[in-house]
Length: 430
View (cartoon, rainbow, N blue to C red):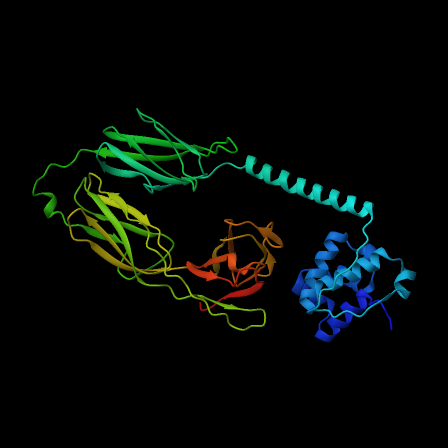
């Protein structure tokens, strides 16, 4: 006993109608244009962009409707290889949707050559784009210590630390002795330079060995002062803080200012008191809340502040959202502490980072797809900045590789390795 081949369009349309959705909703949910969905259901394959894209549409549409994508692709192959008259009368044994079957596929030399040519051209375009991006970019150079100009430095050397392109060469200019150093494989570097009394203007640049391009210069000015002779005078100069105010609420870096003994060096530190409360909620596409396990934020490394000859000091300390005790102390002295609350600010802002493998990504920010990222595959180690006023929609094809930080709160993996997960993150509270 035989039966006619299933029509691909009839299978799709029947499953969609059973699901109770129209083509407009399918377009919103799958991001496949309605005219392509309609062409698939009508069997008008000439209106589709090509076999490679059509198979991708069938995989996404089939997964959305709960159908076996490979079965749909088999129907598509049959209907595109066979003519209309052959399709109408060609018998085929019945086949369950959820079960893969072996098949004898006759592929013409022309089809093989076309497929190979398409893959070669696509690979060439990707490679050219990757090489152009790498060779056109200017390497980043970020100095993290000292965080800014140093008004009063005691000593004839200072160590500069920062981050740049992996294995880049960092060159120092502006001093009597201008050393250079090579960053490690992660881009971290450290270089010690000799100083002279008075003003030292230190200019650093980094050259990326891959692109052979140099970064923009980063300048730090260090004022070297003579070490204050031991006397009872500094001990009677009280260390005071004018900023931050006690129980201040701050958005961004915490400003620090005050007075102390001229010429002294102060240590600026922060200790976490209370981890931040999430200002957002996470749910799946059906609206079911998704529990999250935030990682407590880490305190930044201590910073050094110098008290100028007038006895004043200023600076800032970047800390994640939460409640912190910010302290300033001279060597051997009692610290002066202010408790501050660091607020993440309005909206949703953070980053998405991949760890352990690549992943297909869809990212909507307030309903708008993130250009050049949404609908593409991000590589292992890649980081993407994300922000929205009200809602973020994130769909990952490899949820186990996704790490999110939203409003300063770091969230664990979205799901298991290789699993497809979609989250909707909405702002809560004021």
